[in-house]
Length: 174
Image 1 (cartoon, one colour):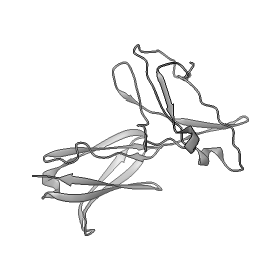
Image 2 (cartoon, rainbow, N blue to C red):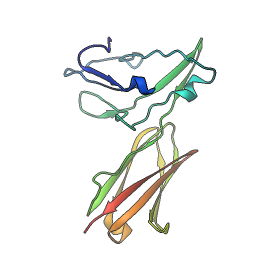
Image 3 (tube, rainbow, N blue to C red):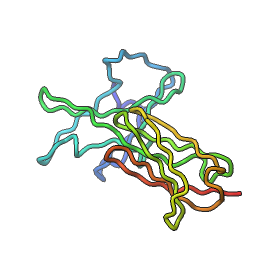
Image 4 (cartoon, rainbow, N blue to C red):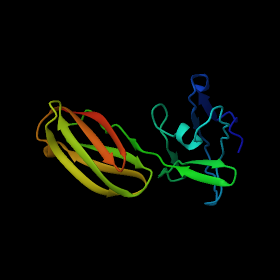
């Protein structure tokens, strides 16, 4: 697949960031062994390439879709000669909707299966809700009800999974 086609957008390369979006109006069928496209990088300094390059959703959502609009995993495979390893993605997304008045959905990506803990706390640091979940590799979600927090205001939620932690702000309105 030639990603220089007109339906590809690539930006921020001069900043050391590659953010891209690719789309096609017709679904493409690939076997599980095929890649839609590959990006090849060459290291310009010593180090592990798998530690220097990552996929995240800071600028562009790290997600793909099939013909049914189901969200698929996006992965990064680093290769050195005959050795290769898949770099996992840990990503905590902003809750949607935010602000909310009834319920909100918190989505997150994990590089491996495992337990996670979501902690909701107020601006003083008081823990209001702790949710533990056995999550799977890839996209997961939790639903938070306003009634679980008990009041409106500005709050934070923190997701802990293996050696990953991230925090976001959520707002509950009346």
